[in-house]
Each structure stands twice: as structure tokens, then as C-alpha cells.
Length: 406
Image 1 (cartoon, rainbow, N blue to C red):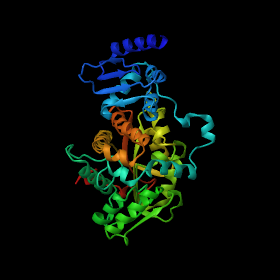
Image 2: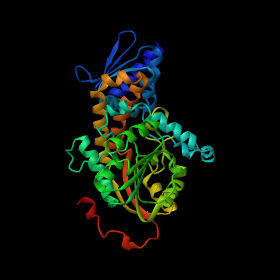
Image 3: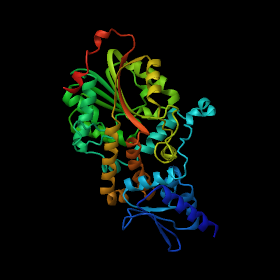
Image 4: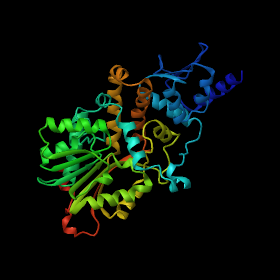
């Protein structure tokens, strides 16, 4: 009886604020229609009375946990599920972001970012299987924000344009040495060698990525110009004319960014250029995403992942010995990229269910669409930042940005 009273109050509260495309189906056969659509676009089935606690206190991390662990059964397209979940979380009237883990004084003293922890986190996220990622990425398997120059490109074209945009921005020339930190499945170094004539080293901590990247380099006949290493960036030696880091620095940890950029500076040859392409938080205090979205990602998707605010990134670059030369916001591009990934994921859902555990399927089902929502609503962003060594002769710098878009 008490649960029924709370459920009735919850239903009235949601209806007063939102018109959701949602039906809630209870364990006893009853249902609650909150949707004007027939049939509703999203259904949440509560298989037992215990599942009600997730609906009655519906933060994004709690709803996500309930879906992943099977306490709630949710049907619908992922984008609709995320829209409904965010509205339910908003209905609680608690939009505040939770503190980022680095805000804890204790964790400032005992950082979770050791070499072992970082490698473990990378393996957890990236070593699901290469076939798994192939079901929603483009054929080159580029797992980072694409670049939609005109807005009408397909995903594969936009990913090639992104790589060319990066390599053009940093002025890669034939004979240049290039280090790609977090090289993924090798798409950037292969393009840099084939089209731009660079000699490349790509490093990753993912064994699955390492194996396939080496295969792809061999298939392209580029073994003499590209070396793929299973190696921590902190163990790389030598100097490079150009350095790229695409979708990697999110794993470093906010407290270690100055150290990270300092290592990049040591690896950069005099007159060299580096680009950092990575996700940032829009929250100046660097707290987690609203309504617990960041807590869900930290628990289920990116262990130990941390997002810095753009201001922190620029400051720590300077502390590491680098001068920021150009900053470009690609938030709109990443919202589009994640939306296309989510569509591909659902299009290939049957195959993904065959190759991945049910729990893994549910995690990624909501994660990709949730990221699209977060980028679209300015919770997170994506910046490409071009740097050189601080204190260099300005004659090394171009007069304008025209060369980036030729």
C-alpha cells in the first residue's frame, strides 16, 4: 500500500512537469501510461516491487544501474530511453553535479592513476573485442570525434576528414617523425604515412588494438614506415617532429595533466607541433555530469576516467612547457558522431548480442546515446588544441589559420 501511494505521487509529479513517451508496466500486470503516443516509444517494466526504488529516486546512474543489472527492463530506441531517463532524473529537482573524484582530499594524496591501474582500465574498456567495436564504428575503426566539414558526410568520410584535419593542422610533411599516443586501431598513423609521407610510431595499452593495428599496417605494406607498440607513453623515448593524442588524455587523470604534457614536451623536437584532441567537461568546478550521468560512466564504462575543464587543460599545458597556438571546439561534431554510433549499434544489435555479454550490451546501448545527449546539451565538449614548445621564435608559427582549411 505504501509503495502504491508513493507511486501515485511520483506519477502526478512526472505528469505535471513532462509529457513523456513512456509506459511503466508493473509486476502485477498493471501499467501507467505517461505517453500521448500509441504505442509509447519507451516501456519500463518493473519485474518486482524492489525495482520501484529506482523509479522513485531516478538519477541517471541509478536508472542506468537498474537497466544494466536487470532490476528494470527497458524497451525502446536508446535516444528515446536517454530522453526519458533524463526527464525522470530532472523531475527530482536535483540537477546538481556530484563532486569529481579528484575533489576528494584523500584522493589527491592517493591517486588512482598508477601504471597498473591505467593499463587495467584501458583493457576493460577497449579489449571487449575488435569485432564488437566494428559493429558501430566506421570501417577504419576510428573511435573518436569525426569531422563533418559540410554536415552531410557519412561517418566513414567524416572520420577520414577528421584525420586529415588533424594532420593538416599540425603541418605534417614528408619525412617528419610522428608519435600517436593512444593510436587505437592505427587509422591515423596509416593515413599519416600513406598520404602525408610521415614515419610513425603508434602506442597503445590495449592488446586487441595492438594486434589489429599491426595487421592493418602489414596489409597496407607500411611496416618500414610505421611501428605499433604495446607501450605506456611514459616509456617512449626519442624526439618527434609531430605528436598527436586523440581521445587519450581523458585517461590520464586531472592531477597528472601537467606531468602528462611535460612528458609530451620532452618528446617533442625543437620546432615541433603537437595536437591534443580530447573531451572536456563544461563544468568549471570539474564535477561529474548532472543527474549522476558521470557516475554511471565511471562505474560501468571508463574506470578512472576524468574530464578536465578547458581552462585546466590550457593551464596544465603551460605548466608542462607547451604554448597553446590554436583551439577549436568540435562539440557539435561529437554529438553527431555519437548519434551515428548509437544508430549503428542498434542496427547491428542482433549480432552484438551474439558476441557480447547481455550486461555489456546494455551498458553500451545506453552509453553511446547518453554521450550524444551530453554533447548536444553542453555537459561535455571536445577541443582540438594545437601546441608548440613554449618560448619559441614566433616565426615558426603561421600567420593565419587559412592553411588548416585548404
